[in-house]
Image (cartoon, rainbow, N blue to C red; front, side, top):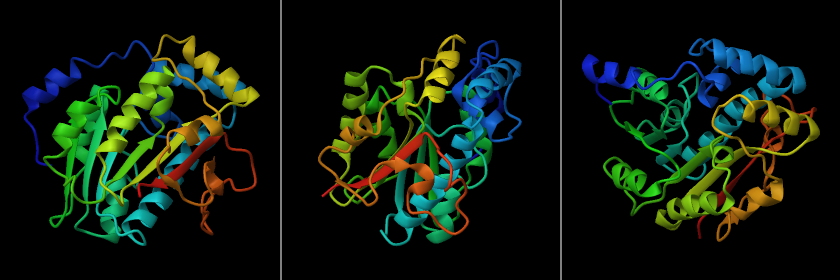
Length: 270
C-alpha cells in the first residue's frame, strides 16, 4: 500500500463519530491499545463489570488469528488472504504473520470503520515481494468486496477468507448467511475460511445486553452449532468449532485452562 493524501485522510476523519462506542475501538481498548475514546472506554468498563474475561476473549482471538494464519501460510501453502472485519491494526496482523512465513503473500483487508481506514493506510505495509490492500466496505455487501479484492488477489487460486469477530455484528441470520455464502462461493477449490465469533454464556449474554444498550452497532451471540452452519459445503478441520484456546494450541497459547466464550474454526473448500 502506498501513502494517500492528507486531504483524503481529513475527509475520512470527518466520518468518525466519537460520541458513540464502536466495536473496533472497544476491542482496541481491551487489547491495551490507545486508539479509543471516552465512550469506548466507558462501555468497555461497563461490560467488563458483568464479564470480567472479555479482554481475555480479545487476546485469545489475536492468538487464534496467528495460529490460523501460520497454518495456512505454512502447512496449507496459502499465499492469498481476504481479511474481512480487520479492526484497528495491532501487533501480528494477518499480513505480518503470513509474510513472515511467505514474504510473497498477498493480503486484502476489509472494514467499514473510518478510524480503521486511517490506521490501515499508515500501518498495513507489505513486504516488497508481496502486497497488501485495504477496502473500505461492509461485509453485508459482498459484491463490492469481491470486485475490489480481485485487483490484488487472484480468484483462480486458493484464498483464505478470514472473518474474525465480525459476523456477530450482522444480527440477521439470513443476511449473515447470504453474505458469507456469497464470499465463500467466490472462493476456488482448495480455499479456506476461518471464523471467530462470540458465543452464548450467562456472562456473555449480560455483556451483549450492556453493549446493545449503548447505542453502538447491535451485537448478536450465536451457538457453536450455529457457527458450524456457516461452514456448509466445506470440510471443517479438526478440532472443529471450539473455544479459541482449544483450537490447535501451541506451547505459548494462553487461557487453555479457563472458559473462553469466543469460539472459532477453520474449513476447507473441496
